[in-house]
Image (tube, rainbow, N blue to C red; front, side, top):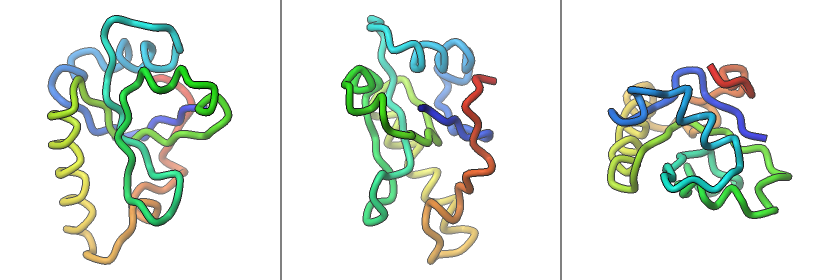
Length: 112
């Protein structure tokens, strides 16, 4: 299942129509337009994972819980969002890990 962070990091293109973009990601239909999702890493050795939303069609992802913290229109914008996330985390505390900063209580399965 896909869980969305309540204060989702978005680039300018996604921020114009966030609900529409989220619906496209969760629909699991092949769209011409794909997005780049930034999720919390599935293992604790990594910080984040960046994946093109077309990957979500693989059967493996149907059984995983993905915690999306950022959504961008392309790889370049996703890299900039990732930099912003890391800076925000480290401004709070330089030793904080993503699972400490992005607490699971702030995630929702609903598209808002």
